Every structure is written in structure tokens, then in C-alpha cells.
Length: 214
Image 1 (cartoon, one colour):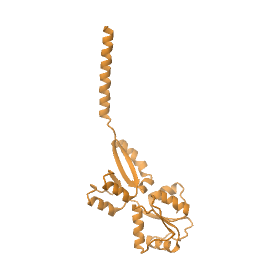
Image 2 (tube, rainbow, N blue to C red):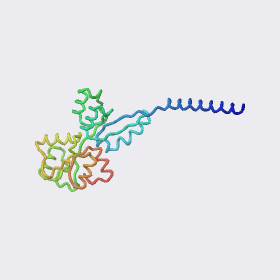
Image 3 (cartoon, helix red, strand yellow):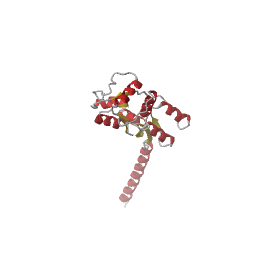
Image 4 (tube, helix red, strand yellow):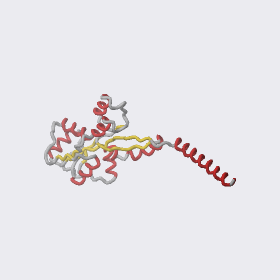
């Protein structure tokens, strides 16, 4: 009888010990904080997030959910409160976002410029041209296929600004509005041997993967 009582007491003590250990472990290791990052397809396609997020998540005990969309849609997610952080590239729209009270503060994080890509045989003859409006003028004159993102992204915003500065309204069979992200547009350009405006980071990553555009 005494042995049974002592065994029961041991089980009770062990149970309490495990409960306390479990509670202490839970207190020491809370669930990771969830952070929603709305960013551009260009940033996502560049491979940057795959490089930096693991270290960030480990350092800050967080889980980052990446929503990869165009700049316009990313900003809309921020305005509706469906994203915690925005990583976009359209300065005027970023400033307006903060001024309207949707964001607390804006930081310059990095820069990414734009390039015009096209087939290696360059049917429009724009290789080496240093003025974007002049290159666009020649593209329109040549009728060479051009694929626009057409997705309210920062890249599309820049493209529209160049057409406007060149006093050209792009239209016709040669001008294709894809409504797709940067990676998808570059794939289409390679398949159709067309031109496009791309951010340099995505361009370099895709060329490193064998993209046949220059």
C-alpha cells in the first residue's frame, strides 16, 4: 500500500514538473510574430527577399508572409490595412500614401533603375541609345513588338511617363498590354521576340538564368 502511495506521489510530482517545464518553455518561446510584406513582383523576382528574409525571421522571431503584386496593388493593400510593410518603387505614390495618413514613415531602402530589353538581333535598332524617349520613338516607328506590364506597377508607371514625354500614344498590334508581373513579361518577350521595360535587378537575375534578351 505504501509503495502504491509513494508511486502515486512520484507520478503527481513528475506531472507537476512537466507542467511547469512546459509552461516555462512556452513563456520562453512564444509563437513567431506574423508580418505581411506587400512588395513588387520586381523585388520578388530579383531574389533579394530569398536572401534577406531568413536572417530577419531568425533575428526577430518573425514569420514574413510575402504578397508579390504591382506597386499600385501593394499600396492599395496598405491603404486597406491588409499589409504591415510596403516595399515598392514609385516615389510620388509613396509620398502620397504617407501624406494621406496610411503610413507612418517612408524610408529610402535601395535603388533600382530601368532598362529596355529586346531581341539580340535588335530589329528596332535601338541598341546603344542613351535617351529613353528617343528609343521609344524609334520603337514606335519600327512597329517592333513591345510588351507592356499594364498592371499599375512602378515599372508600368515609368513606362507610361516615357511614352508621355516622347509625345507618343502607344497603340496597334505591335503594342501588347500583358497585365502581368515582370518575370512573366520577360518570358513573353523571349517567346515573342519583343521589347519591354524592365527593372535592372530582375533583368540581371533572368539573364543569369539564360534569358535570351539584351
